[in-house]
Length: 72
Image 1: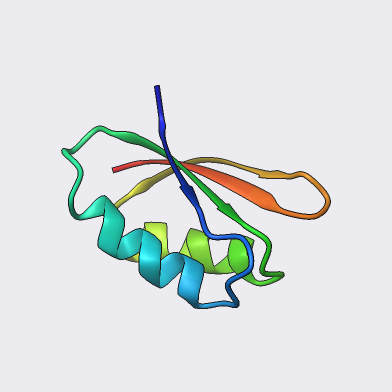
Image 2: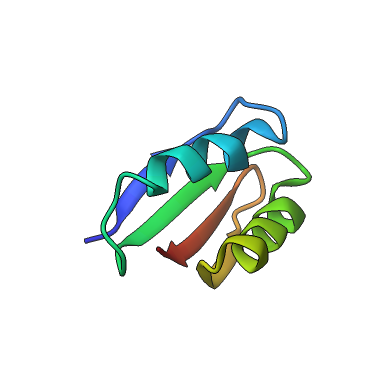
């Protein structure tokens, strides 16, 4: 089961910054779902994954929020 980090209500770049701190505490290979409603979140999470060697599995737009699935 994936670890879920819900950062709805936070404005960018806060969701990605908080996710970066949280995933450091997790063992490698952990699946994480990051939920955010900031309009820049999809772009920022893609950049963060590329820079930090995290695997971005998928980003799902649910209308009022997005869910990014990553592997640490």
